[in-house]
Image (tube, rainbow, N blue to C red; front, side, top):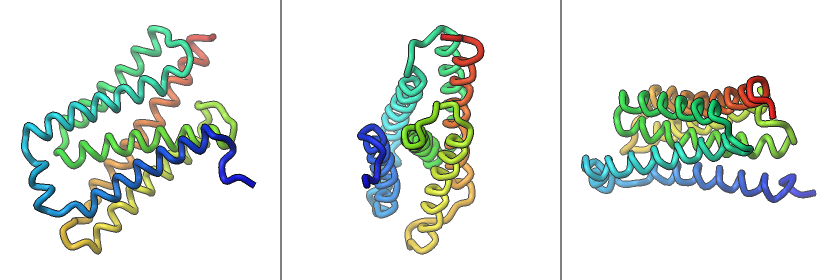
Length: 183
């Protein structure tokens, strides 16, 4: 018996695994290497690149069928909300929001494929939220035992916020698609 239902599910789980691996690998980045990344110019490039990628991912995820103008507006509104939240935060929290939004989208896709349900399935959305948030919780718990890292409850909150944003936008887009813009 195969671990995955099909190749699509497998590719989504591999993508999610790579995101988790990247998040956890960053825990082992030395303090001197981290100081290099604190340059304002470098952070600006990374931030803009991350926001472009998150926006493109959310747009692509939401456009699984033909988009109507209302769907596009909802996606852009949700992305704008995310940008505004990020501007209020420090640099580390910005990365948490980007990382865990993408992770949640990949997990949601994998679970939807696994259980052969529509993207608007609330149970799958809750499960994706819980899995992604739990990965963020584990990320912070690991930092308790790492000498150059600090456990931060706010990071856990940001991880769950990003997961909630991702599943919230999925559910809103699917609701609008199903009830307002009937195919």
